[in-house]
Length: 478
Picture 1: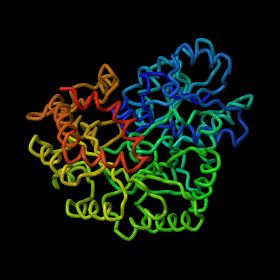
Picture 2: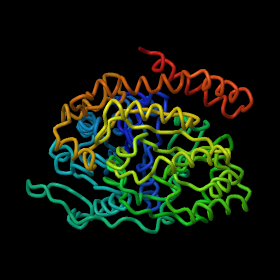
Picture 3: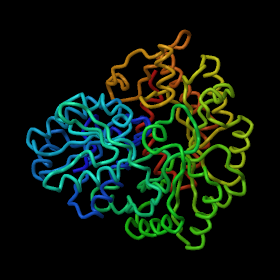
Picture 4: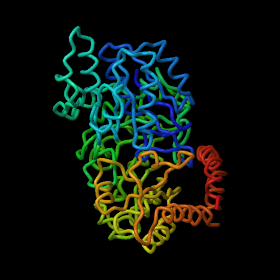
């Protein structure tokens, strides 16, 4: 049983900054889905359950677990929900005491020993990229005398002491992993998932894992998938597009959730060329870096790319240098001009509170966001997670207001920064994010642009109203 455990309703645990999203976004349980596919390929009877997406209570999940009687229980975690997730395990093991319980995910990977110590009901931690760790563990547990010491990537207890086996090598032949979309089809209701910048319904896939860039804050490369870009073959990706088109006929978009699809420019062009040749005709979006050239952007548009999600982060060059972003403001400006010329929408991400930030640099970023004028923008305070360089920096400089992980969210499950420094408190950051959203979205020019967009483009109209309905109450809140 692979479980995205209950927490806040619509809690997006699989996102890079897990929280209840103000725009209504809720991610697919991506990595659990890929692991489920690997287990089923190996012949194991598997249940994938997404409690937040299905609005299931702990009691309802416990009933399903009691009926399924899992021998192996795999529970996803995040920093903000770790204590809740441990309690879920404890509750499920009351009715399933023989289930071997494993925690997975960024938080457990960053702090395996600490996570294991939270409860004796937790049997092990599967560190980092866990598809094959869980597979090998399941195979070992099916033996009469399991030898946990043989399972690479596992942290567990032995004779009262915590042991950590050697690392499981990263997976390089990603074509061996079954399509996530096939797992969704069998186990999930794809209409439960919504990304505020994307058309709905959408299907999220990953065509490559890891990222070659060195951003200090980004959690997936530093805790899960590594800082090299490993990817599926172009043919394998195109086959999944074909499967999605056939199996989800009402899907409006495919979201490619690689950390940075455009990290390998030549592969992007090859993929686009094949999508064009095969006449796939599906709209798609992706995470991109603000340095893609016009020619590649035009080919992406021709191949069906509708939108890019781009982490601009800051409008101050020194801040970008401090976080090792590796981009320059003049290149970002040219990228935005080229994106508009190519006809691809951009969802811009701006992070306030990074290393060296001041109120003046924050205001510069808000001004920069309005200058770039992407289709949509999000402003959020720095969220630091164990296992990242940013977390280590802020902890070392005593800028963390707490190390109580429950405080990573507010009472509603929304993002709550715990980074505070002289001249720029945590409260200041939250208020400045609100101010950034108001200044960006309440511009008469922007409102007119979105009104026109919703009139002339039926695809965008549905997205605008679905997201705006949730977002408006936060935007207009003082």
